[in-house]
Image (spheres, rainbow, N blue to C red):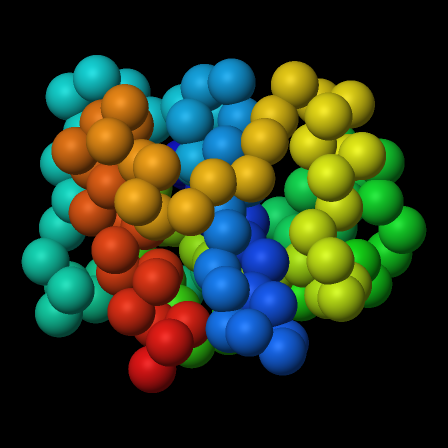
Length: 137
């Protein structure tokens, strides 16, 4: 079974500014997608669905954040076709007023706007686009 991946974002409550956590390997936490990965169509819906709670808690642990610091975006799920099988990509948001910059720094990560995603793979750019559209409604 292929474990789900996670995209982590922060949406500023007052301005609506959206920033994504970018790890050294990209925006898909915590294991990069394979080179041959391809994003499935938005209407693709396999019979298996993943609940984000365990994945979100693991992200909090990896980033050294307290429980409840990351909140799942339950209505978002994308699927990526890989040589190992379909990989679900879930979405979660940092709950604080500001992004957890110190947690990002500790893990060699940084927060980026969607306009700074040019260096990412095409799959990751398209995942960010879907996540961005989802968050902004």
